[in-house]
Image (cartoon, rainbow, N blue to C red; front, side, top):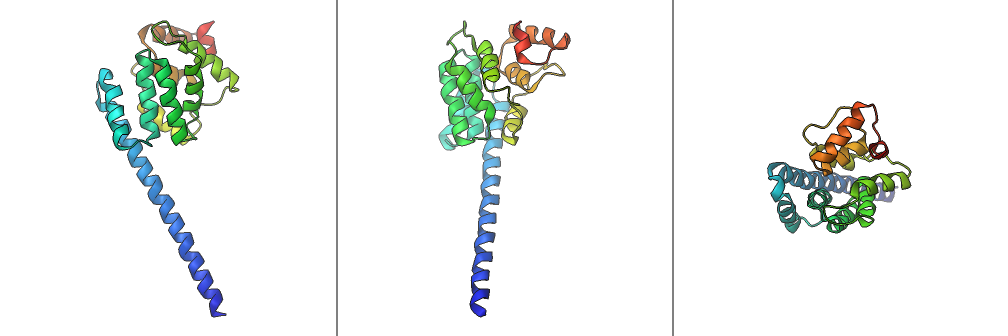
Length: 190
């Protein structure tokens, strides 16, 4: 009878150690993500790529930093570089569905000022069966960092992602579409 207690005790210790390890991993992961978010927010827009690269130099598995690096690269018209960054973000956090979508959209887009990234985001979103790009806690964490000034109320989650990635000209188009009661990205291009 005492051997059952011994085995049960060992099982309880293993279970507690597993739970403690998972808790510590989540806390460390949250701390690393917060560090990337804080660095992004405190950097000037022109410095964000180098700041995210600095974060990644010390924490190369930081999915939030990879995602934000992709955002900085899109804003500079370096769409193919952004595809790699979004792919790395998804590699390190498979719950970051918006990173998977952005990887494919960037791979299908042209680089430079004449990029068709906005259209490719809409097409890719539709091809992926219109997922809610803010459904996971990981996506919501990134979106919290990407809040952009002047974001119109009532913008869809996909519209919020696009709003954070684009320039002022396209933002005016999106604001006009939202004011007409359209809240899905596909309607921005009709």
